[in-house]
Image (tube, one colour):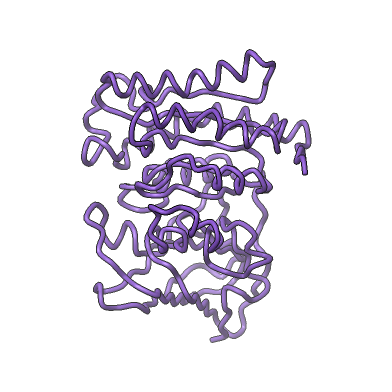
Length: 344
């Protein structure tokens, strides 16, 4: 068999900002990690939602992955946060071939072989949610052709910023997270800047995000803001930093999913909604608001979460269905105005 590194042509890595420049499997730079005092360093190194794509007519594909560490997650199994996932065929309708996973928490390097027909098809490998990856090797039959992958329909990525829910916790498999489902349904690339317990609307993060080339910005960090007062102090300033640099960028403001709509949920919703209203009053036609209390629908809301906080697969699926028409509208608007819009 012949072997390719994830760094080799024609492999394509999606979902990591500036990967083509840095060649690092790291979702935010070291200096930004250092500025987020409550953020464990590995949260900035791991790459939930990152993908590797290529086309091949190989009948056999072996994938080997190596972690720098492996730590149990109390809320998600190895299948959900320390596995890679492989799809065959189109990005919007591909077939799930299976996953590769470590046999124990002591195994930092692991591999799995997948078989497919000899047809020339796209292969998409989703990286694990939790662990920093230090190497990926992809082997195919010696006689197989390997080509660049089919591009996404919306090639310019959507950028999501928010909590552990944005980071796909606690879906049973990463690709059932709401932003992963939306990527599949709408055939769009995306960056996942969800940080477990650590997204607090920091100014440094807003300034970093404002410099990223994207089609749509979606943010929903209200779950991680300690109180409604801290959310009020950061939410609109965070948005204004983005808007100052990206005057026409479509922005979707969301609030967290919830089972019970209590006073805290209402207070946070009102703060986010006020940011939206203020933008609209100033003539901003590139903003949308989604009330997170609508995500779980009207029936069996209590069946949508693993712990009354994080969605399960049903909860994520319902979230994605609510967000889908709004995101599609924002994507089409971004596409129609050929959005560039960065102010230096």
